[in-house]
Every structure is written in structure tokens, then in C-alpha cells.
Length: 349
Ligand SMILES: NC(=O)c1ccc[n+]([C@@H]2O[C@H](COP(=O)([O-])OP(=O)(O)OC[C@H]3O[C@@H](n4cnc5c(N)ncnc54)[C@H](OP(=O)(O)O)[C@@H]3O)[C@@H](O)[C@H]2O)c1
Image (cartoon, rainbow, N blue to C red):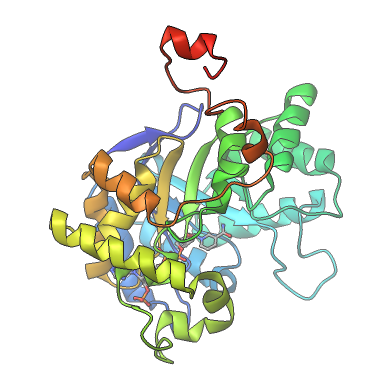
């Protein structure tokens, strides 16, 4: 297993993060004993970064994780959770108000059986609560010792920049990480969110790195997914998100690269993400022990540059305006390239 710093923080995390959305999930998830076996194996194999959320199976995932954690050294692990989703029918049991953040943190700590959370991520933006109220509540949680670091998830690029700018101005903790949907089939965050996180010194934790299983090669697009499969069970979400011609072209290439390298399609898809150093870790969704063993191999193995490029190029990602306007005059705008003197004179450097 290789480890990376989570953004500009001093926190070292395994580049494979154990996601727990499957824990206790009916239909496409796993039961308590499998969840505990998966967590034990992940830690034994050198994983230290675990992601959960209060709303995964409405608290049951945190409880299962807590049961597993009881047998391990808490201080050796980085436990991340989230709040934002509605947790019960009472008026304020949702969002990022001061009241809900305080209550959500206490409830997560109870379920996890822990004294503190390493990384509390706000699960999404709350359009009704002033940002300052949220950031001050997170600061109080850090000062109380209940959480160590804060991160965000599913924020727009401008919200990421605004949050950390405001945190700086008020002397409050900055977000150290973003957790966003990112995989070979959905590259939306390359447009604004990934550059925003990098500019803010935040590490990216990718969710759904295998596109719900599409990138394992088990769905090949000849017919609709079987009713009992994960994509079949979540058809309302996953079909509009992933099921199209371009994506099946990419999946064919992932399978071809897996044959060339002797790796599995999942390992190829995970390491395509990890090749980008703006990505700190991938949150793997695991239903069985053998899936965990398979995905853990991506903790050590790196996809060769040329094959990575071939996968990137199957269906070129179009970042749109204003990228295309700027690129009329500048050949690239990432700021990471090196140039020959005549390129600078031409004005393209
Ligand atoms: N912040 C957010 O809003 C957000 C949203 C979603 C998820 N997440 C986080 O991201 C984690 C991962 O999300 P995800 O479950 O959607 O991930 P994913 O990587 O897109 O999909 C995981 C699914 O792929 C299949 N799979 C996994 N490893 C495999 C392997 N090696 N070989 C074959 N099939 C394999 C399993 O489904 P089957 O076996 O059923 O086919 C599994 O449920 C979650 O646990 C959670 O921690 C966060």
C-alpha cells in the first residue's frame, strides 16, 4: 500500500480508502459479518483511511464500522464521516446548521464508538445556512476535540474557493479535502472542482471510482443490466449517469488494457485515477472480500503513462468555455508545463 498526504495537511492516508456505503445496504450491500471481515482485512493489508457517513443505511454502516474498529488501534486509523442528509423527521435533522452539525457529530461518535472523528466532511452544500454559521460550527467541533480536520463533498468549485477564503479571513479551519464523483466515465470535476481543490491545497477523495461497477467490465451494454445487479437495482440513478455509447467504448478499452497488463479492469480504472497526483485517494465500494483483495492491488501498482493516456483519449473530455476561449491564445493553462524559449516568445508559454 502507498500513502499520500491529504492535500496540504499533515495527514497521511492510504491511497485506497475503504468506502462503507455498502455496509448494511439491502439489495446491493453486505451484511454485518461481511462488513466486519472487510474492515479487518483492509486494516491488516495496510489500509488506514476509512470513509463513512451518518446516512449510509441510516446509521447502520457507522454502527457496523464501529464494531469492527473496536478490535483495532484507533490512533493508527483515519476515520472520516459526513453529515448533511436528513436523519429523521424532526425539522432540523438535516443540513449544515450549527444545531444539526453538533447533533450529527455526537450521533456519529456514539454509533462509531469513538472519542473523535479524524475528518468530518460536509456531505453537500446547504443553500439555506450561511457559510459562516457552518464554518464556525465546524471550528467549535475541532476545538472541542470531537473532530480533527474538516472536508467537503459535492461542492461546486466556487463554493470550495469561497469557503476556504472565508475560513482564512475568520481564522477558522480550512477544508483539507474534497470528496467528489470521479471516474473514467464521469470526468466532470476536471472542469472546475479538481483545479479548485488543487489551488486550495485540498486532496481529492474520489467517490464511485468504478462507476458503480460499470468499470469492472461486468456490464458490456449488449442489453440492459440484470434486475438484481447493482446497476439494475439503482437503475434510476445509474442508467442516466453511465449507460451510453461513449461509456461502453471506454469500458471496452479498460478491458483491453487489463488484458495487456494482466491486471483486472477494476485495478486499471482505480489506477487511472491515482495517476493524477491531485487525487489523494479513491474510496472503494466493496461488497465481498474478494472484491477488496482485487481493489487493494491498486494500492501498489501504477498504470504505465502511455496506457493511461490511451484511456484518457478514448472519448476526449471537453471542458467547454472558458477553457476553449483561453486556449485560443494559450496552449495550456494548467501552469505545470515547461517551455522552450521560442515558445515563450511566441506567447504560447
Ligand atoms: N460523498 C458522496 O456523496 C458519496 C457518494 C457515493 C459514494 N461515496 C463513497 O464512495 C464509496 C464508493 O462508492 P461506490 O460504492 O459507488 O463505488 P464504485 O467503485 O463506483 O462501485 C462499487 C461497486 O462495484 C462493484 N465492485 C467493487 N469492487 C469490485 C471489484 N474489485 N471487482 C468487481 N466488482 C467490484 C461492487 O458492486 P457489485 O458487486 O454489486 O457489482 C461495488 O458495490 C462509498 O462506499 C462511499 O464511501 C460517497
